[in-house]
Image (cartoon, rainbow, N blue to C red):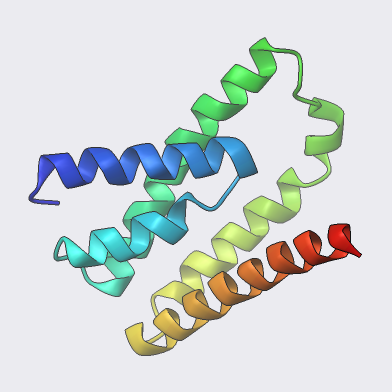
Length: 123
């Protein structure tokens, strides 16, 4: 990203979303990285790299505060590792236009779930 101020804002917004929700930073990072000149694949790979560190920091803080449950997390780790490997192998073969649509679909799905949760509380 050429603009350091924009990069700092993108990083802060990604960190806030990641820290509050456990994910979501990529929703901001990917479009801003693309705007900064990266291709779709470069933006998504860079956002994943960024999320790794943001997640580690958030997890460390939650661990320090006693809010992290290792026993609950352990069951997800093997599947997460296998899913990450499978996705990275598929990533090479997926065209950027299709990848952009998949990413957009996940963003729309996440937004729908959040809105549904809000509306369900009102009812």
